[in-house]
Image (cartoon, rainbow, N blue to C red):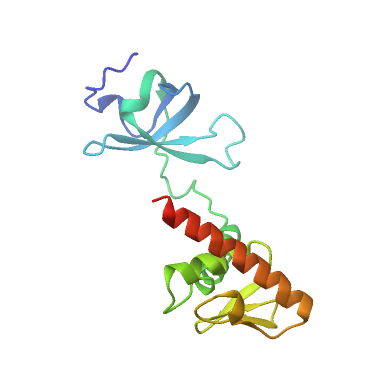
Length: 183
């Protein structure tokens, strides 16, 4: 059955098993979980052919992207709670990992610093371990770069570490000036 974009959505009744070809060239089979008429999005559950206890994927597909589909049959309600299985341990570990990553990302954002200072921090973080200490950048837990974040603002640490931070700082400042001049 070809799609003309004017489907009334009746073809997407809950439980329908469909073989779908998209305008992007994807081909797959899935069971309709729901169809949202206002947004024209059909939600499909894939992975039905294999073991019924195996993992399944959920795909949200804008119906406009369906090139053609064929009806394979009707099945039970895909949202039957007696047949649903969630691996709560896996979900909890994914959540914890996402929270840890979000906390790490937040610590990388300077509070009360300029966009230039943040760019310098980001450049230093590509090659060196860095963290914020209020508005000062602490590199390798020993070298400090304070506002205005010039080579002369680098203090502490060994002479070699100090020189390395100065070099990266000067290169980043040059890059920022070149980018600013090009705009």
